[in-house]
Image 1 (cartoon, helix red, strand yellow):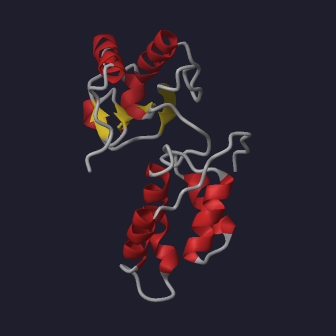
Image 2 (cartoon, rainbow, N blue to C red; image 1 turned 120 degrees about the horizontal axis):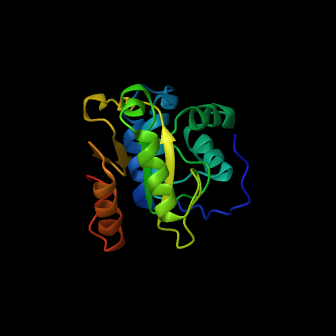
Image 3 (spheres, rainbow, N blue to C red; image 1 turned 45 degrees about the vertical axis):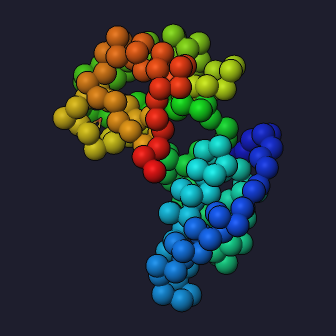
Length: 176
Ligand code: FES
């Protein structure tokens, strides 16, 4: 588990709690742990897209499971963030098809353009760049995910345009 000095305000609003209870209700009584993945997504979405240890502990409490059961899921999946990330996180697939189609060049170009290393956040808090494993869009390599959406057949020109669109608020992050 990644340790961070960043503080996170935990805010389980009545609306969020209602959504969590609804997700739990999809599973038999006593099997609330099965709701862990969707609950983590909801909680992360409601907390600036990251999950501090304290927030993970809160999720464990809400689901009446052990904190370690939450940690092992959060640390396994790259879709859960253990420290603050940029508003726009560029997740470059770096696996096989994308790798042979210059994913690394695209990622390096983006990092240089934004002035960050992979895993860092730009000073204005707008962008992060990370490498992830295959996102299942191998036929559209090289590609990256930003929020809920895929950007495919990436070129430097496309990356320039996406960054510009993010800066002017034209990039939608979620499809709900
Ligand atoms: S190898 Fe990149 S999406 Fe599968």
